[in-house]
Image (cartoon, rainbow, N blue to C red; front, side, top):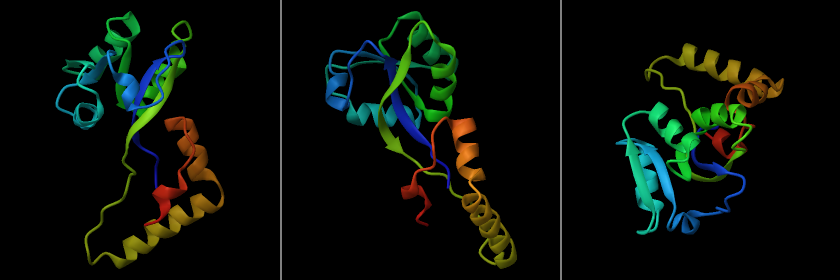
Length: 147
């Protein structure tokens, strides 16, 4: 029900449209995360993947110019995009889409109905899309709403 994805972020001046464009680029990523796994699988062998121990270090490496690109979730990326006017960062492409879901115990039919009704109401009145745009800086993706 929520748009969460992992994206490649870079300055507007750098042309990167897909994983093949990561060749010979330096890329910051948080070590041992889904971002790291996704990047490692997608990047050409010539990509210079620099792994850091936390997101603050990933962001700092990108902002300071230590790396040309960074790979983060759209929730982290939205904050960087909003605050770095001089760098003019932008999302280059999505590496992985990972929609959010809600888990409930199997025999919680009343709770399941209440949750589904609340989500249906927020979808119908636009509040869920509005919330997504406010907090994740992206509209809801209809593909994530199928289940």
